[in-house]
Image (tube, rainbow over all chains, first blue to last red; front, top):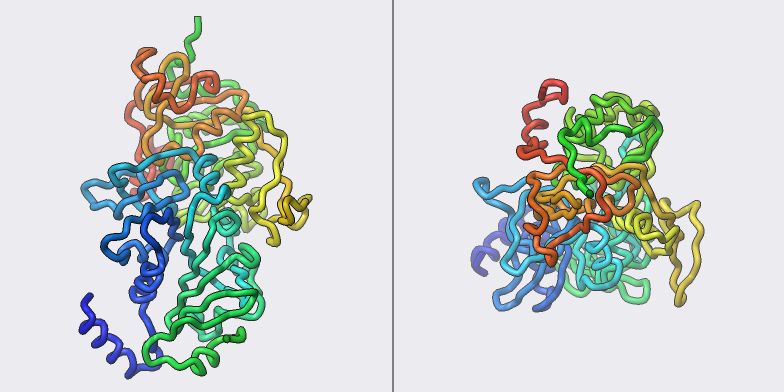
Length: 228
Length: 239
């Protein structure tokens, strides 16, 4: 999308408070800008997957998917779908030339052993100390399922979170303390939301960028945690 | 003379006893040994403890095994999928036991089981509800959780090519848990898309060396689990 089109989009958004700030594609673009050339990256399921579409030209990034592929390519076209070539979200994907397959113990050795540079995850809640809750709402009627989330936050060098700033009913996802069950403690480095980008430094949140038309005060008003 | 090839899925699963621990390979449908699981349903062993990443989809494969009330407990990382109906229903009724394990810890517990390591410490799940009752210890100032190895009586695994010695290659991301599950079972049972003569698989390309494998059966046209699920087929309708 070119800059004029983007700006046009922002203008339409500004007219509606509900649509204030970045949309998910723009959020993904912000994350992509922070992924350096040569990085080994694991993208969580959902919004994080969008990041792959926005890596700036001239940068080469290798995607790891924890079910056993390094060098994941784009989502498969319907005629090339292979039910035995999937990503962690069980979507049919492709492998780039130079990709490698491996078993699960090796895949999580890459994760736990600190070989993956960056992981981008979604969140139910992130605390001002960088605690992440993204695997369970604690609702006893839900079927508990954890997958690789706890391994990723324990082992990957840098954890980025990409999420809407507030839930659908308007409560802040950026909180003083997570009330949902934790995925990991003090694990998140940076949070990208529709309203702002925030860094977790020494257990405090610092706003490093505001979405167009969004003031610091506005973000603070929408945030349970204290912003700096 | 060593020959691990058996002639049918029925022969392959013979001897699986009531109360056995059975590892089942696959990440969703990729690598799921559907034909071996269906043979286990026909065979009828009950009170099984299943070790598998997921808990099945639709009414075929692992979901059908659970639906047939052969599974007492499942050790698993992600029992919730878009089309899982059987496990959630039984779980909510309290009729199946679940041990939820982070995916990497599950893989490493299985690997450890196959490698003769009784337990290990990992930073995964520290400060979470999944480590509440587990022993913890600090290493270099960082906490880690004690996790025990998992061993099984049997494992059911799907591969691409096998020879009579049990050397295996896999197909793409269908490899997932196959290699570690073969290592961790007393009897590793494998369905191969193709059985080849010894030497056809280049020794440099063997993924699972035959020592870890006990029975191999050729299933040349394995079912496409997602198609069966999409068409709402139940396992007994496949015959």
